[in-house]
Image (cartoon, rainbow over all chains, first blue to last red; front, side, top):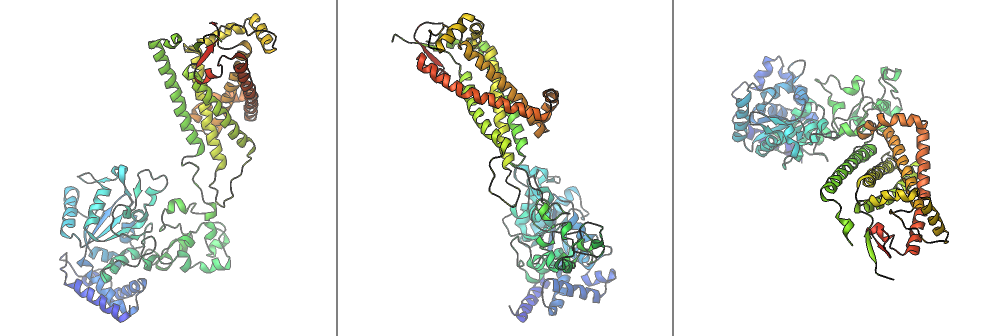
Length: 386
Length: 224
């Protein structure tokens, strides 16, 4: 699509959105920025950054700014499943209110278990009425893996004792767009790691609707907000990779844009943490960096207002935005060549034999007892058969 | 040939444990030789996920438990089962020098088969006692070896009991050696047992092999 054509399309979409009523009668984003000491210039710089992140030409910056201002037109429901709230923290815990977190405030957040003021029945009512009122319009963001099937009771929330699976499914039915925020809701995460005792499943296994995965443990605030802005701008779901991750964020590997890549190519490696190579900022491949197998934009966008990220801080990537990274990327501080494998037959040859042995010996004891009991009662009639 | 008289000689428990024991001895020998000499290697793979030795070890352990289970059950039958009284009374033939003499003469084709009180002739009974000694020995040494390859569950429970035995036998390598020697004793027993079973079937014509399958023996004359 030609740029002008796309520009026109996005302008139309935004002016249509602008006509939507504001959901909250609150301050505009401009006033909010003003109150928090963020100048229009800072805001426009941020908007330019987001535009570049979504791989749009810089002429689209005003549209991005307008999209950010229109974030209060779309109702958002944020559900917590089996998780640590790290993804919400990633968005909210910045040293000062960032533009990303302000936008998160500005969004019409109808329901968010950790930041809402309501509790108990009132909270439950908020969720129900939001799902009712904004049916087919709301943006659903889900954080956390979902214990499914027979073991869904492991996650039971609220006064109605609803399981996570039920509430996620209900919310998904009412949603216009669904985002799985973080590796847990994208791929199951740590609770789905071997041996997955609660049968935790990704959101995409719970609903039949398309789910956009925004994995990472946690994903950066940019990737979360970027997805909201992308939806506001385009009204459609972004181009996705094989794991339903937006290509604009997960299109390239950590390794491809790594700041230590030159050292990799030069064969300059940290051999162990704290050695001379580590001080010189050499490549962390030999101390377990999984950047070559991990698709994410950390090496470009970094974390905490673009301050730093694991590789910059001197530790290799652990591959947290890849499926089943707890099982597949370990050990985290050694190359994949040292990967640990699960033993044979799930539990190990000897453990299996032990269980069979216990069963057999128990059966023998039961057999002896039964035989003795029957013999005591019946006597021995077969002696007389002739 | 006169009228035949059927006699219920071997109970179902005896017959089942006999054949399960036979199959497990075969399977344990094959898997045991692998564990001892590791004579098969799987197709190579660059990932260590084949675990051929662990798989062999697991089946060896499982079938070992089968052997232990049938040995315990059969020992119970021998001691307490009513049909098995024919096995127990064979003890009186075993301590009878006259029966010994007649039996040896029979095997040398110099005399008639003695009339037995029990199910087994004295040489046969002695061989079975020897077999059971070896089976008990191989089971106990097997359990000692097992308790050292799995330290939880049953293995963990057993370890405390079998450790003194292990020390008494002279350490784990001796346990392994005794396990191996007991296997050879059993392996020598097996062909002799099969030969004698066929010999007695042909010479006795009383359906003595049939007895271990159907439980019934066909006596030409009243013996018991």
